Image (tube, rainbow, N blue to C red; front, side):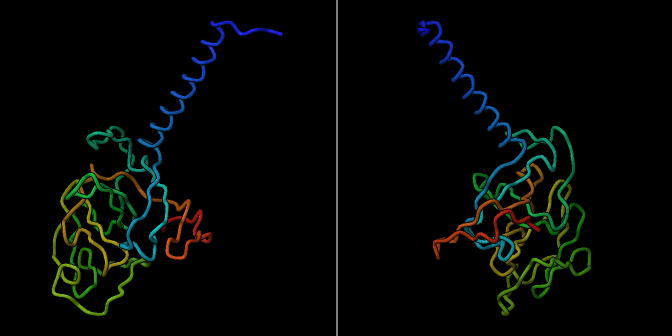
Length: 205
């Protein structure tokens, strides 16, 4: 029977440490540049996303970015209308928001009695809903027109009557975008204390 020498024990410990460090670096790389998980805390994207949904966000779809400044190192593409994106909230960058892109650079955005117009045409988003019949004298129901500046997008929640979005605080800088939401991997209904099994693996439209 072989006996472990002090040198052998140090070698085994070193191998474990190296393996752990490599795993941590790989996880950091994937989370920073490839895909990241987020949890939905509010109902602003109902019915597309529910409170308690856990989603995956593609961080490579719009290019490889500097994780500190948001500057694009390798360009792949820009957000398009209808994309569901996660971004740093402009009024508090420490918070992450999720909304749907409804306007890109150069688009003219206007809301008239709850109806969204982009470049003078009604913007049709099949996943958006209005749950309040009352028309308020506020940006929620009447806003604009405004033109989206270069390097920015205009976003709105699918739950149009219950979403704090670009109608109230303006545009989202492309540098603030973390990535495009693409799939649900878990969904927990805290009110009924149950898993929403039918939502697992669902592609986000």
